[in-house]
Amino acid sequence: MRLAEGVEWATHCAVLLAALKEGESLPARRLAEYHGVPSAYLAKTLQLLAGAGVVASVPGRRGGYRLAKAPERVTLLDVVLAVEGPEPAFRCNEIRRRGPAVVAGRAYPPVCAIAAAMWRAEEAWRQELAGTTVADVASGLMSQAPRGARDKTARWLSGVMGRNE
Amino acid sequence: MRLAEGVEWATHCAVLLAALKEGESLPARRLAEYHGVPSAYLAKTLQLLAGAGVVASVPGRRGGYRLAKAPERVTLLDVVLAVEGPEPAFRCNEIRRRGPAVVAGRAYPPVCAIAAAMWRAEEAWRQELAGTTVADVASGLMSQAPRGARDKTARWLSGVMGRNE
DNA sequence: GTCCCTATACTCGGATAGCAAGTGTCCGAGTATAGGCGG
DNA sequence: CCGCCTATACTCGGACACTTGCTATCCGAGTATAGGGAC
Image (cartoon, rainbow over all chains, first blue to last red; front, side, top):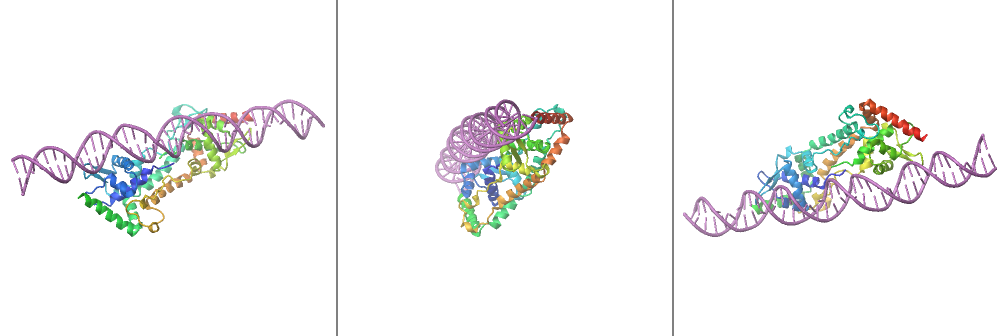
């Protein structure tokens, strides 16, 4: 089981976007530059975020991406589901209804006990992700980041914003 | 994020093996026949289970597979980790240390706040899986299965075992 | 000086190749069994 | 009749193709901006 690489990028992007002031936005090119990842592929991930309503895209010359909601209202689950899709990780193929011991389909309960257990575990995972907001991880990253990195980020941000003013 | 198909097969196989009497074993061929899945590929999954110590393989003409421990002592986490491997789903690539805001590596805390949050969610998932045993899902499947299916299974099992006596 | 218009440059969005991992299959090594042979 | 030996048939284990989905990239459509021109 592997989460897509884009999940990490998307989360970091959301954290950076959370640091923007009201009305500001960052284009995919700048987000990729800041995180040191290929711009073309990050664009694809950002499109997924935009399609799911996690970020909003601003078209036009001074356009870019911004968070669609307040950082306290965007959970990690929103980000993960936007990138990975809503399908559960465990897919039940109903193999209990195959083989020599099969009987008429009506007699089976709707959900296999194995699938139920797997999905219960996934639900716990989602619950934990839903309990963590982008604001939480943003403050966590902020407080744990070295002072130098914070200063550089602030300078880089103001530089990027000033360049476009 | 997708779990391998083999996880479902492996769990069903573990449940069926839990129904065996002491000293009995089922070969991969029979397990595949019972579940209606390709025998050659199921063998691969069973090898993973055997390598992880979830099931034990009995070599020789009347050999096969049996549970390595009592069904109450085998958890779904054991089965999933055996098939999927122990690596976490979220892989941190430390992209916080790339780009224009990077500083000397010593200054960063060992675990990124984002990775910590993701791994905390995975831990909740594993906890839930570890709390469910093969015996639990076996009794669940047993009680929810139609009576006809139970009878057919019992007859099929005794037939397979009798054939080899 | 002010307003409008046009050309521009930058953005997002979707369509297009490449590759790794999961999926599916096969054949060889090893062992308990069954039968035959000798005592 | 009993024990031993050999051939067998069945098992597991690992090595080998194929397909799906993730990774990576590009180019076209659209829009806010900047500049120039007319009034």
